[in-house]
Image 1 (cartoon, one colour):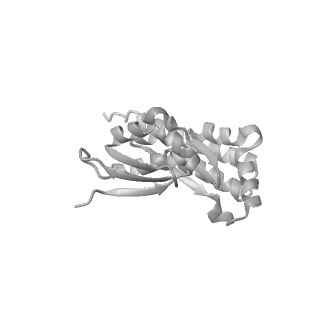
Image 2 (cartoon, rainbow, N blue to C red):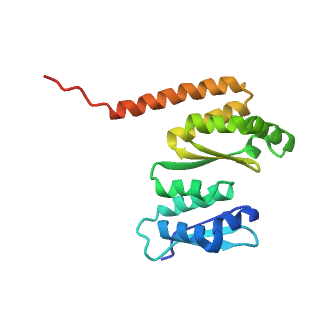
Image 3 (cartoon, helix red, strand yellow):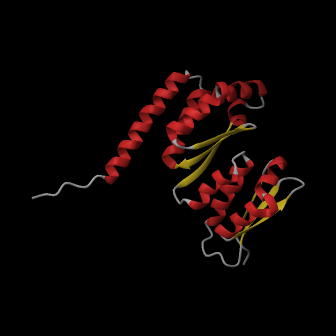
Length: 193
């Protein structure tokens, strides 16, 4: 029986980040998830297979998300959130699916998402507590499902032309809702007499 595997391609300039100094990043992914990464430095191909000690085949998906996140511009320590925390997810928005090959539209929207001196990107990260990277033609997001969902909605609002203050107001409202939900989880149920 063949081992479960996955294959992805990342930009060649990100292979050094994936491997890390003396292979440290690659080794950490392999050890923590019990997978093997076979990196083709010539074309950016990465094959992920389970090693012989692996007991959970679903780790292939976590490894694929971590490798993809590094390939999409995240520093390894941010991508490791996916590995370390069960509730952390990776998502990306490919601007080419929205604008086709129009480089001018992609550049304009990236400018709106990043904002002056990175202000908009930072504000989205602060209000959602999700990590966000704008790299090439993609927007990458790492966080809990709720954090990533709020950040994705904010990015989509900017893509659709919403004004920045409208997006900030949406995010502040969303943040209050998320904090309220967290408080409700921790509240002690009232005792009945």
